[in-house]
Length: 388
Ligand code: ADP
Ligand code: MG
Image (cartoon, rainbow, N blue to C red; front, side, top):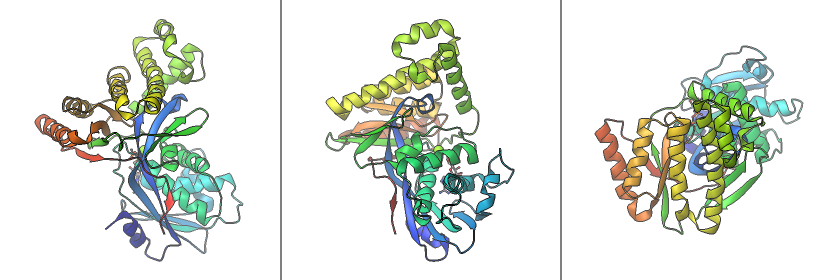
C-alpha cells in the first residue's frame, strides 16, 4: 500500500484533501544553518502524506500509521503544549503536527477559516535517518492547514511555522534548513539557502546528464536531535562567535582562522574551523556546479566529511565506514549528511559504479558486524503538493 492510500485509510472518512511534502538530503553545508551560514540541500522523492478533513467543532485530531493512538486537543488549548505557556503533555510524534497547527493559528488566531480538523499521517521517509522525516510531516500538515484554513501563506511562511513547531513544541533546537529544503524543492535542482537572509537560489545539479547517481547510505543508527551532542555543538559555536566578537560564525572567514586559534581553546577552535570551512565549501560547491558540473564537487563532499569527522566530531564508525568503502569503490565523493551521530551518508557515484559501490559498502558493514545498511538513489524532487 502506498503512503498516500495509507493516510486516506487511516483518516477513516473521505478526506477534504490529501497533501504531501518531501524529506530532504543535504548535499553539503552541515551545522552551518544555525550559524546563519550557507546550505545546499535538495528535496528527495520520499514523501509524507497528510489526509485531512475539517470538523464542525474546534478540536484538532492527529493520527499516524506510526502511532497506536490518535491525539486530540482543542485548538484553544494548543498553546499549553509549549513549556513556556503550559504543561499539556502529548506524545512526541504528535507535537510535530500539533505544533504546526499551533504555529499557523498563532499568526492570526482570529483568521476566519480556522476550524477543527482531523489529520491522518503516513510516510515513506525513513525516520531518524537524517532525511528529515520531521520537516516532511511539518510540510505536509502545514500545506494541508494552509489550504483548509484559507491562510494563503507562501512556502517560506510555512517553513517558518514548521521550524517553530520543531523548536518550541518538540523542543529540538534545529535550524530552518530542513523545512526550507522540503518546502522549496524543485526537480533536478538543489536549494542554495542563505540561512541569515533566507534568500534562496535553485541550483541545477545536472546529475542525470553527467551520468551520476546520488546514493543515500542509511546506516540505521538512529540519531536524536533533542539530546546531547547537537546542543553541545550549538553551544560551542555560540561560544566561538562570542569570542570572535561577531553575531554568528557566518561572519568569520577562512582568513580569520589564525586569529580564532589564538582566542579560544582547541576544541572550540576546531568546532569553529568546521563551520568556517564548511561555509566556504558550500560556496565552492555552488560555483563548481555552475561552471564545471557535478563531477567537480566530489572532493568538496569528501573534505566536508573529514571536517565533520575530525573537527566537529559528529561522525560515528558506521558513517566513516560507509564513506571510506564508497570512496574506495570509486565514488567521486562521499560524506555523512544530516546532524550526525548516526543517520545517513551520501555518495556521488557514476552510473556504472553504483553496483560496485553498493556491494563494497554492504561488505564493509557485514565485515564490521554492523546492521545491513539501506542504500538507495535519490534524485532532486519537487516540494509540497496537493495530491487529492
Ligand atoms: P529526521 O527528521 O532526521 O527523520 P527527527 O528526529 O528530526 O529525525 O524526526 C523524527 C521524528 O519525527 C520521529 O521520531 C517522530 O516523532 C516524527 N515523525 C516523523 N515522521 C512521522 C510520521 N509519519 N508520523 C508520526 N511522527 C513522525
Ligand atoms: Mg528532523
